[in-house]
View 1 (cartoon, rainbow, N blue to C red):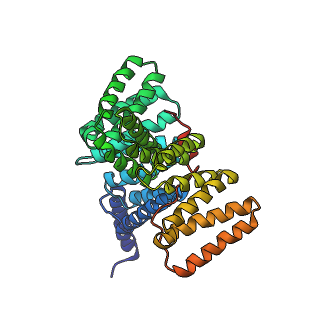
View 2: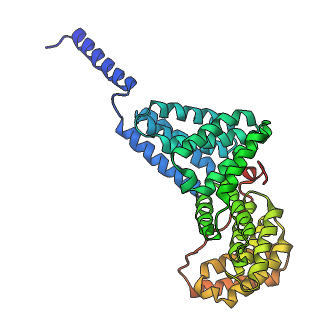
View 3: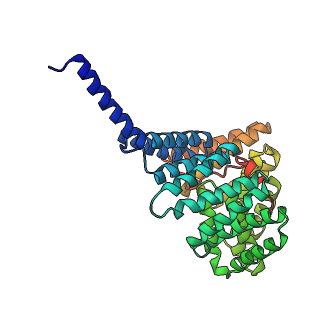
Amino acid sequence: MISFNRFMKLATHVLGLALLFCLTGCINNPVNLYTAEKYYTLARAAEQSGDLERSAMFYSRAYGNALLGHAPSKDTAYALYEFSRLSGRLGRFDAADKGFTEVIALLDKSTGDTRALRAPTFTEHARLVLDKGLYAQSLPLFAKSLTAQDSLSTAEKYPFEYVALLDDYIISLEQSGHSDEAATVAIRAEIIRQQPTQFINRYFTAGQAAQKRGDWSVARKIWLAAVKNAESSAAPSEAIAPLYYEYGRTLGVLGAFDEAQAYLEKALAIERTGSGRPFVMDLNELARLNYDQGKFSAARIYFAEAVVALEARQAETHVSADYIEILTEYADCLRKLNRIDEAKTTEARIGVTRASHPKLDSITERTPYGKFPALGAIQKP
């Protein structure tokens, strides 16, 4: 039988070994790793829904659990990168700055190819510092970003995102007094921009991808490049109108309401002639742009015309969910203008449509006008 003193010595020895293994990272904790993955999934979903605060919280927990679970350095770095990126979008400069620096340190400890994360980390860090107005400090970060992006052939694979990066680098160079180098980079950007009009669809792919992931600041730069390219290459108006439309929507999300109105009006003017897409899409966005600003008188005019155009296309039958969403906002707009009888008539239409179509699925996502104004106030083209 083991004596009590001997038992305590053995227990202490075992506990000491367990602690040593944990501290040296020799044992992965599957519970923490599983929890980290769950939080990562929740963070993605929250970001896609526009809840950036909740997303940042979940990314932070994913990172914490990755550390506790002794995940590989590269896996831990991914969670920290996402937390840092969200912190930057929420205006938490110090947390983002520190986080991006630590991501690179983790990648330096990692084995294997780390370029896929190293490139966006330097890019986001450079833009974070640029947006803070620390132009000189951003220069080495931009240089490292471009080196990393070039190693991935980003200019060839994703030319429009690459040009957006060059444009940001140019701003930092100019503001830091390096005008000659800025001019050289500008030439490089212009060479990439001068692509034939058949590449417009690639702008759409890049711009819509940026919008989908909630990166509206990058989306703005892509749509601006698309507009400039299309206008300078004398693209047909029906090809330019959708670019005006997307650029206008993006400007509106970023809080540049007057510019958004102007570009959506440009799209409407072209598409009213019957060229390209149905102009009701432009009317819908103009109505909502004004509605979300509280400009109900202006919104009412656009809503009224949009409803007529939708009904002409039998929207109540083909896209009833979207039709009801427009009618609902139109009715609310009318009530805010104290046009109660018109509001009741509109609400009656909603009731009839709902009764005829009990199962409703919207085929579009509503533009979140004014939701990210801080991103749009950083640099104007």
